[in-house]
Amino acid sequence: MSEQKEYRQARFTRPPGATEVLLVRHGESAPFREGVPVPLTDGHGDPPLDPVGEQQAERVADRLVAEDLSAIYVTSLQRTVQTAAPLASRLGMEPLVEPDLREAFLGEWEGEMFRKHAAEGHPLMKQVMREE
Image 1 (cartoon, rainbow, N blue to C red):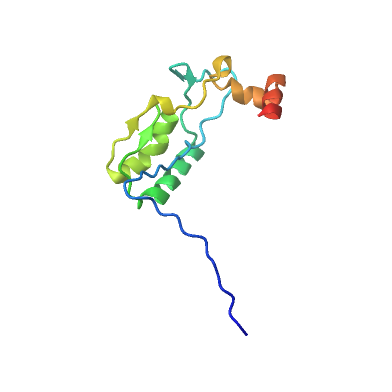
Image 2: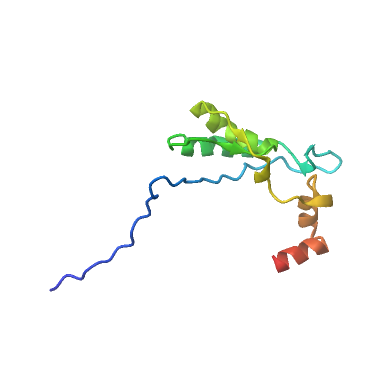
């Protein structure tokens, strides 16, 4: 019986001098509650992390603490700072604020109205989902 030759996929390795970027989305933020104003930072909704999000941030730190990281970047929104805090603390690093990393500006839907409209099936939200 003859052996079949195998051709494996080459493993990726970074070229010398290349930078690897790890993107981590912030943990779950506090829910929007009608009648409770959501803090804004530079016009963007800026709720803190929910306790679930704080646990997620701890798990991200558990996962990434052994990585060879040279920098941690956050936006000016508190949920990103809070998500990075456990990892930064364990590594003894100070996160660098990069406001341009923020997500899209939602205009009049900022302040968590996006969540409310999505949950209630707002016609414009349905159109956004249809058209992606």
